[in-house]
Length: 627
Ligand code: C2E
Ligand code: MG
Ligand code: MG
Image (cartoon, rainbow, N blue to C red):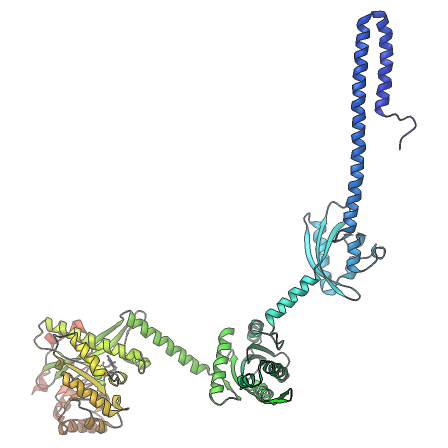
């Protein structure tokens, strides 16, 4: 708005200049031509100045037009933006909304003004949005959140960005409808966690639920059962009637199995015809039995699809936590193992995982691994126990006895590791190592020119002796030590070694004896058929078991056995040696009974090979034995 006296600056300046010019012209007339010159110059300057001013005026007009257009454009942008904008005060009251904002909520703009935005937010997000608003007004930055909007006929997921600062006393929030994205996300999550065919949870969701249930269990001092179910005869259904019918059957069974569960239990499909249920809140093992029975019933009931009656059943494996105190993955594996037992024992039944048995299997596996590594790392050593003739006082040889120089547990006796590999191929490998090491040791002793060749005996395990090519392998081993005469090698076998096939073992022994090697029947008298073996097996020596020898001084029965074995040996023309001679009295008694050869702690304990030469040197025969 302009007042009446207002004149644009250019007009005012021009009037001033003309007045000045007139005045100067007046003066010029008085002062002459120079004044006139200067007046003309001024007039020219004035004209230039005027042109400049007019140009400025033009620019100003243009700027105003641009500004107006920009404001219009901004309003249009705000109004027609594909993003919904709302201006809200701190309580959420709407002061302004654009078209998109109104259409997002499906409410006329006029009906939105003055309303509170919180009215449209779903209950579960009320607090979230209030906190969000507070943060927006307190913070200069941009806040973001996602909220669910609850409208009369539908719900919407909105992504919200808010800023406060440039919009007067209100904040401006920008809303984008992310409902399709959220739906897609939910769909993806469903696919990731549920089986498409049966709509049951899949393996991923199951292990999640199982871990949670385990936590819950531990907190409440209760048990849970992991039930692994595999259908019996499902493959036949698939093969006979096709996969579509098979699928239908799976759907039908999953429905009836789900019905067999209690509330709070969950059922998942983890593969073709494999299901896993987690039964929670159990106080005793028996608590899960009714469910298992119902499961068996549900899965074995005939199902009719397309006029075809289908019959399958289920093999179920169960393990209980925390009785089976392992992690979720292991629990599933244990239930799976138990399911296999149920299958193998005839199907259509359940089997409870046996933790004690599993522990034993685990310990055994670890022991086997330990022994394997000991072999690879050369942790086995041979100790030698001297054998003497008590009557003559001569050292007649030594028995090689294996020890495990364990890096942590120290020196281990054979009882601690041999039983683990009794029927394992490792026993053969270890046995061959023993023979080879003993032969190497004998070479070394021989080279040291001890005053006698030391006959050495090694113990042979049953699996080793029963190998079809044992004699052949022994030949190879002996060939590697040509300096040792085979007659100085003695093989100690337990009479029970021949248990499975006396004929074959006997033939093997004969083949070895042809090589020059001798045999001793170890621990004689402890087996069930000692006499049979004595008759059938060509052993040169009989070793009376140490248990009889040890107690013969005060146990008449043991004494009788020792006497009997000595008499047997004589009549079968075999040599006899007593093990377990712990005292001089034992030796004295044995000599009286006619057994001259002995081995035992009373003479020497098993010792490292390096101690043998010194022991032989120092050995003083017992004087009373030689009288
Ligand atoms: P074995 O062949 O009857 O060996 C005699 C066992 O009795 C040895 O135990 C020895 O230390 C022990 N002993 C010797 N004298 C006495 C004594 O006066 N009193 C007592 N209480 N014990 C005595 P070790 O070394 O523990 O061996 C136990 C068994 O392990 C052996 O019984 C043998 O059957 C087996 N074994 C040892 N080394 C080997 C091996 O290299 N291969 C195989 N396959 N078995 C072996
Ligand atoms: Mg022996
Ligand atoms: Mg023995």
